[in-house]
Length: 236
Image 1 (cartoon, rainbow, N blue to C red):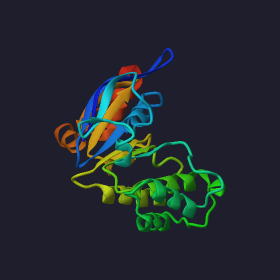
Image 2: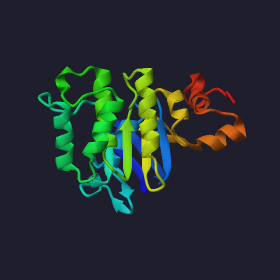
Image 3: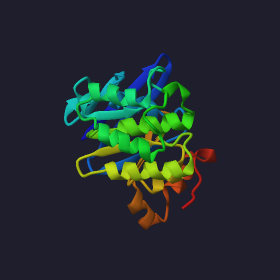
């Protein structure tokens, strides 16, 4: 579905993504993990067609990502991207105009699940409310690929559970979901594949359930092992 071939992104003297090759297959939820500066956001923006690799390429169904693929790839960034004059109803109408796969009914249902109303002004939203609104409008698309960058930031525990339910409901044999998060334990109950990045490089890919059964390692154990002091201490 989505293939990254030796993708590198350089900003000035800094290499944000370094020769990353991986294949994301339909029917899976991927946890993209790593500390700040590991390249997660940069890679996602390139996969969404919002930024071009310095070298290498990312393919969606065999074709380079770009304007055409944006109709099938839904990306939620960490930054707020709604106009301040908008209400949440305006946000839905805006997405409805831009994306043929957007469902207003699904959006309204997700807002309700997140305890949000369409009359709320985006400029008055708290950081947690804004995070929930971004998730609602992104998951209201019937995309082939959803990429959510830090979807749980600033969200309370109860709302987090509801959002996890919505993410799992969105999963399907013909869909790909990619989630990045510093809340590693939250990924354990959602993702079935793990992608670990460090300093822009791909460190490891794991099948989470297979790893748990064969080694006794949780995804949090893997994280500690890869990113712990001294470059990783054996934990499992």
